[in-house]
Image (tube, rainbow, N blue to C red; front, side, top):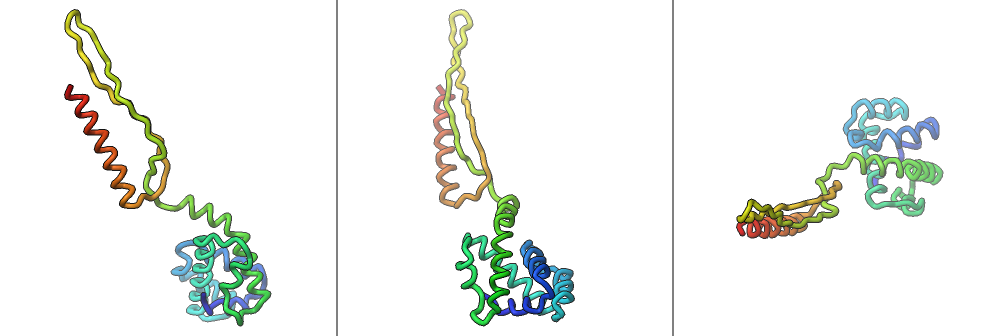
Length: 176
């Protein structure tokens, strides 16, 4: 995926690599000048090299989440062949340790539209009597259960078409 991982070889300890992997995950990490400067100081590299490393680790962690990579073998093949084997194993282990937390965090922070899980509706005719004349009043009862997700345009069009038909049926009943 990237050749910038070699900068990790200059890390003073495993904890420094662990911290770098954790710090590189958030969405703003690749653009963070503060993170690039602190990484440059820790690894004794230029700020540009540090920024490229943070961006590479950020991309790698998001790639692992997006493709749901859960086995070390799936992640190890993403590193360059010439990359230090024990460092490759360490980064893989760290990313696998953090991925469940990152996945939950990503799911909680995602922006999505409400999703209609279930809708139950019916039209009841309420009748009332005033001496001789009878009056029928249509009443619509709607129960909706909603959850958050994103809809494709086709799905949204289908749902709106169905709701339009319900509206038309209610108009017919109300007109009687």
